[in-house]
Length: 223
Image 1 (cartoon, one colour):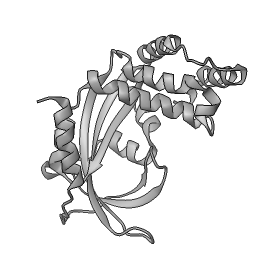
Image 2 (cartoon, rainbow, N blue to C red):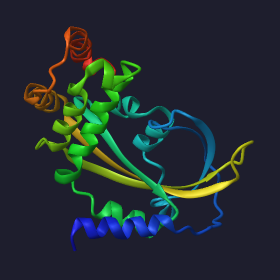
Image 3 (cartoon, rainbow, N blue to C red):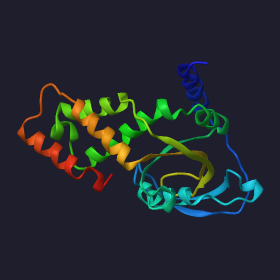
Image 4 (spheres, rainbow, N blue to C red):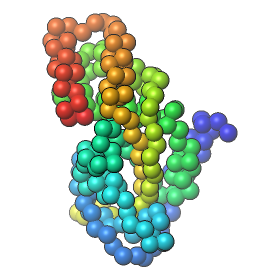
């Protein structure tokens, strides 16, 4: 089955919704997502391997509470950059299919490009203006690069019940995580090749070059 057809199936699954009501011991955590930076309380009502008495892995707890840097601080992942590929929705089966069809060779370039894009966009208010054509070319080059050395380390899922607030009703869904790592030295050397491959048209002006070089010089400090 082609990956394109699989994604069509996933899209159909995610458009459907199913209300669920499982019990279980509540596990309270604040939600601080990488994407939205908004806080909303949820209770974890189920998770992978809960039925056989296993606990939520430390990397998942750290990711939910503090993000990637706290995961990278674990001794297990020292010397590596950590990437967490995440998806969520109402259908467990659709998310399971998404997880099962994950390919580190095919999917890691998009994951790396998204984190590189986030690093550049965080440094300025209007990245398209500040960096010019370099910005779009960078994202494209990172997405198209043949990254090597990325390794899938683990995957996990949780079932969440969000607490109702002033603007949103109580809600339940599933969230899946795939943990990928790459040695820091390998990632930085390949990123340098990506940088060198970019020949934007029109070329950046003096101010854009200065902005680009500032981020490059301090890239991994806030990566």
